[in-house]
Length: 392
Image (cartoon, rainbow, N blue to C red; front, side, top):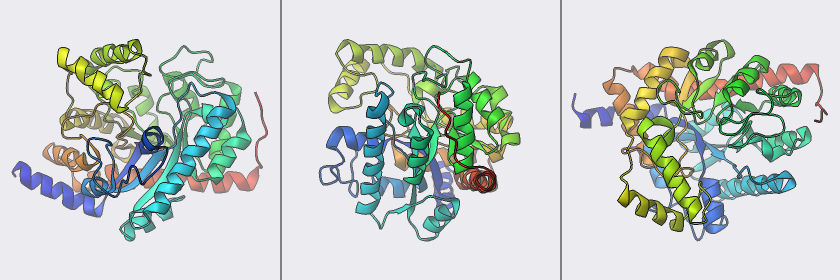
């Protein structure tokens, strides 16, 4: 079968079993570039060159459900982080309200299925970092009531109750309060997201959690030895937990050659007064100048497929998914340049002999099942105990 035929088959499969993507940072990009002004950045039209994400490209990519990240940077502290998270949630609300023909608000697995049947993109939210709750379980519950359906326990920095993958450990994983956060997330039906956390935190959270956990945007550490990825022993815990590891596309996490280059490029940004996560036009101009002098190692759809092959082998096909991290990264793989690229990944997996049934689990069924199972756990737990008022 030719490459063109594989791509046609991939698009046909995605029309029936669209992608549930675990992580997209469009809300932060809208905040930074237009302060959520959708007249200035109208994603109903082609925003190529400005954003990785717009409605036409989501349609072209076969996206059927999106967890929009309501991320705020981890150097935001205390109530500042809470307020900024609320602004991010409001930004997603504006997005859904502005484009009702494209987006459907989704709070449950049933909502996701209903949106798919209606031809709209189910829109859920995930908070990226426990700093967003400022050590308050009441704030955690408030975010859930506002529609947040997962929380990443940390971002890049260790917090008062959980160790991050990219900072110095202070707790050996989760503190006692951190374990209580996981239990309360189980009780209310909020998925525990273990991207960004230390491997010790991953293990502690899976030990405590009675509901499926997710990795909203992490790949396999055995394929690319980066602390943001999932070790094999943790992947092997997912079948018993019911969780889902959603492979990311960020080159510095999936391509060994890109790790050192990205560290140098990030340092170049900081030397010019920019935050290393900045993707503004000014920051990207610095990246391009740096790249002209020092060519960037380029990942491809095959690079991501290597991770998925390994994750399937270790965790099983029922426990893997996709979390691209579009609009949250300066660089993307060739062929997965933006949200229109998912068919290229599916075509690559078809070439490797993945069955249509296995691909349907990867793109749609696994993520929907994890949320549905978390809802069932929450129903049982909420019937047997009330809200936790634990504090640090």
